[in-house]
Image 1 (cartoon, rainbow, N blue to C red):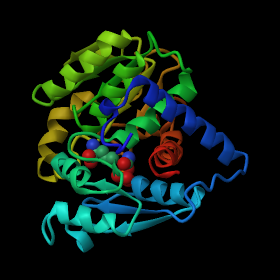
Image 2: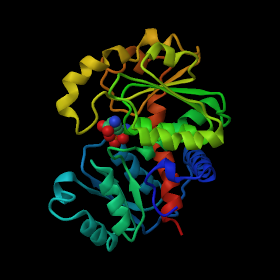
Image 3: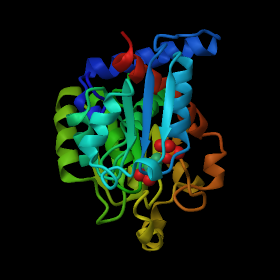
Length: 307
Ligand code: CP
Ligand code: NVA
């Protein structure tokens, strides 16, 4: 693994290896242990968009591993505006040992990876959010065990970057995946086609519907995300109207399995895609997900930067 750009780049063994390492690192940290394998290493955190979880979990992860993180704000670097993406990659490679980047266009992540001499970690693009996906799979494994065959993950809402990483992860691990959202907001056909290739090997059943009730029936996991992602703020009002039938609320969750867990990558727009009752209710694993960002990303950092 040279970079961490998409869960779709991983073999099943690599994905399971990262999850197992994340479990070990979490247990070790909970027991008060240190794992300072990145002593003397620095990770650059390059942001084009705001963040709470991604920034803090990467900074804390580097601290746990004995290294340092350097926050580079959207205003400072102005990726591709003040300086070309390729030149930013070349220059940062002379200063830091790895770069985590959150960008608008996935093409910029690919360009960073092309021109950097150090590993690139995708901290969210318009295409996918693999760090979130890995943390979410860790949370699902904690809640439902390692054998995910026949388990059903239902995503309600926009066929967006978060849905894409979840779809890849589920299809690789052999978990069933169903998405329900409004017409016009389906997952990109290329994403679906790639996931179908993984599913043909793993045995996952992948489905898409416009009916949220059909989608949550017998679900083990319900997942939702904001209706308008960062960069789509101008569409937010129109999307609120279009996505209204796709709110994850108590009525919808009651149609899933009784022990269903509800997930959201956060930040949540409470009262829109998810209700307070669900966020703060017995099915919610939202805060585990947020915590697991640190543990999952530590596994990625150890794989890419140690040694
Ligand atoms: N889930 C997530 O990536 O959160 P931030 O946007 O706060 O980093
Ligand atoms: N889909 C959301 C995820 C935020 C973590 C966005 O891209 O804004």
